[in-house]
Image 1: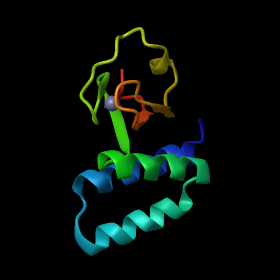
Image 2: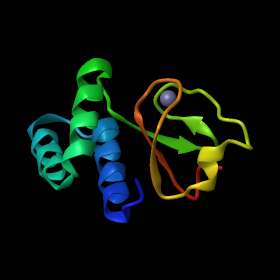
Image 3: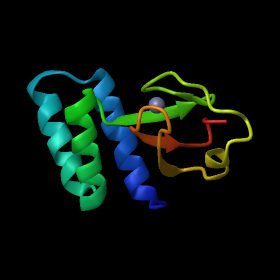
Image 4: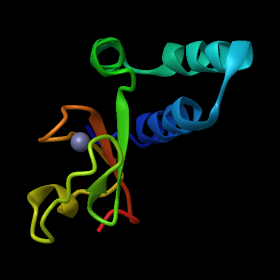
Length: 100
Ligand SMILES: [Zn+2]
């Protein structure tokens, strides 16, 4: 999926998942979730239920969710600001300009 605002939303959600806490966090998460495309929201919620977190970010070719390293030549790295699925843990994986 290549919708820039969805990428931004996922990055915000990711930050909340890793840093936020308490009531404010829950409310902020809900606000962001409302803006997600419904198919993306379903995937995100299913993952969150199963794994605790639904979103991972690729940094220096490492998935923040499962710490697996992708090879330099991986097809996924050609598509920046893109929402992929991690091949290893299945989380929604956001690939940005900082990923490669
Ligand atoms: Zn992963």
